[in-house]
Structures are given as structure tokens and as C-alpha cells.
Image (cartoon, rainbow over all chains, first blue to last red):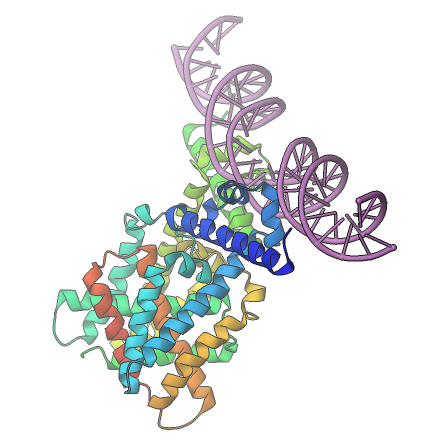
Length: 198
Length: 198
DNA sequence: TATTTTTAGCTAACACTGTTAACTTATACT
DNA sequence: AGTATAAGTTAACAGTGTTAGCTAAAAATA
């Protein structure tokens, strides 16, 4: 005979179990490998029990998104409190962001819908090389010293800026209006160009 | 009676038809909604015919990635040729990149495995707001003028930089070694800080 | 305490999915 | 004309998300 509180406690327990199992599968095989049946078996219940805790598979993903952003927010907040100067705060918060993404990659992938398109093969696609060359050639003309390593670094920086802006506004996470997008783009690229020779 | 050339022509034709159908479905419902059966019906053949042109569903996606990077490369090359000064080249190439992503969003989503996590709901998740506030508060301390609109712009710029770097190195598209990642990150963020007051 | 109501859990099914094996039909070549 | 080859078919396997309908146990009521 369970009191109301014990019930709720039990419910939360299995809910956490579900999320934990899902996280493990995501880490090893990706979100598409997560199945309600696998989860059910892992937590020792039959299939429809999962639906008592989550309305759908998408709802599980949504939980990851929410939890993920909460974890990220608290991590960055605590980093911020360790430093006084805003410059240092921002720089260290950037490191925290990056670390969070890789230490909790299951969450990060959910948060931005990264489907991991064949991580293994991605590097072998030569078409990407063509694209890189064109950009690197242009960057090269802006740089005073001819350091191959630095060119590569600058290329990756620029590509990150472009892809980041693009995918964030594509996933529609922000409420930024359309006319703002162009400003963000130019703002970021001009900052990149200004900083290109250190 | 078809000659060898006609055969190959026919084969390429249906291959293109497959890709076109896939593209349409991706645009309207996303990659996960693409099914071999839907494709087969749309091109007027039975199911296994699709497998004569593509080894698997993943192979179709890979074709999108390759074609996508080719299209992107040629678009950026042609933009580059329209300008003389490297600063202008780079700026306009950034615009081209951005435009490509949205005009060919089916391709771009494939190229980076963007799964579109509930585009509709994404904006309603308040957890994202918490995260934003923390970063904006820090950015605010670095800015001399107190323009709310500009703060938002700078936040999106920084977030784009962070997410771009993170997801590109997570998808493992680049051959950048691990110790370079940190450099890219700091390079980008310091460029951002330097440029924060225009 | 006995009876009803609510809850928890189950099995079984539906309508899909990617993928493949085995068969049939039409075309091309000797 | 007869045979090899290619093209295309149906049917099945193993898996997916999701739901309807049933059973057994616990909680609440009388």
C-alpha cells in the first residue's frame, strides 16, 4: 500500500530510469537507435508503460532539450561567477559551452537535432575538400603572413561562424526577426576579417 | 530495343527522379519522413527498384551531401569571381553561404544532419530563455552603449560562433586536430569581443 | 469488512519502416 | 528460335511508434 507521495516518487524514479536508458543508447548508437521497446525492456516493464511517462518519443527528446539547456545554463552561470572581468567571463563561458557539448554530447545532439551523418565516412568525402579550398584561397589573400596552419585555423573559425548562424536560425531556436539575420551574419564576418591578422 | 547508351541514360533519369522526390519530401516533412516506399510509388516503380540505384537509404543521404557541397562550392566560387577585394569577396561569400543554406535547405539539412527538432515548439521552450539571459547579461557589461537590440544581435552572433564550432567538430567534418579546436574557439571569441563595440 | 473505483500493468494488434530473397517477364545477343 | 541477361515484380522478415482492450492489484468509499 503506497501513500500518494511514495507513488509520485516511484513515478519519478521510473521516469528518470527511462531518460537514463535513452541517454546511454544515444551516446552509443544515436537517437535514431533509441526505441520504446528497448527502453521498456531495460527498465523491466512492458512497452506501453513508457507511454505513461512520456506522450511520445518526441516528448522524450523534448525532455532532453529542456534538461540540456538547464544544465548548460547552470554550468555557464557558475563559470561566470568565478571571474570578475567581463572579457574573461565571456571567454571562459565559451570554453564551458564547448566542454559541455562534448561532455554531454547526448544532450547537445538532442538540443540541436544533430543526426550524426555517418561520422566515420564524413571525413572521406572529397567534395568537402573542394569547398574548403575555395574559402581558404580567399582567406589567404587577407593574411599578411603565409602560415599554412593559421590559414586552416582561420578557415575553421569562419566556417563555424557561418554554420552556427545558419543552423541556429534554421532550427528556429531564436526569436530573431528575418532582417536581423543579415545583420548578425555581417557582424560576425566583419569581426572575423578585422581579427584575421591577430 | 535500347542501346547501351540509352540504358545508362534511362538509369540516370530514374536516379535523378529518386533524388528529386526525396528532396521534395525532405523540404515538406524532413528526412525522417522519406521512405523507400514513398519514393518507389512516386517514381512509378515497385519498391526494390530503388535499391538498384542506391545501396541503402543512407546512400541517398550521402548523395545529397556530395551534391550539396558541390553546389555550395560552385556558388561560392562564382560569387568570389564577381569581386576583386578579398574583404568584399569574403563578405559576399558569407552571404552566398547563408542564402544557399536557405534556398537549398533540403540539402543543407542533409549535409549537417540537422534533424529539425520540432521547429514549431522550439521557440516556446522557456529553458532556452534562461540560457540566453545569462549570456546576454555578460555581454551587456562589455558594451558601452545600452542598446537592447544590439545586445540581442551580439548574443546571437556569439551563440552562432559557439554552436557552429561545436557542431562542426562534433559531426567530425573537419580534419582539425583536437588541440586546434581550443585555438579556433578562442580565436573566434576574441575576435567577437574585440568587435563588440563596432 | 465488503464493494466499488481507480490505477498499473499486460498482451495483441495496426500501420508503418528498411531490406532482401525468390520469382516472373521482357529485352538483347548468339 | 533459343538462351542469357537484365528489369521488375510480389512476398516476406525484422524492426519501428502508437493505441485499444483486457486483467489484476491497490485505494477509496460505503
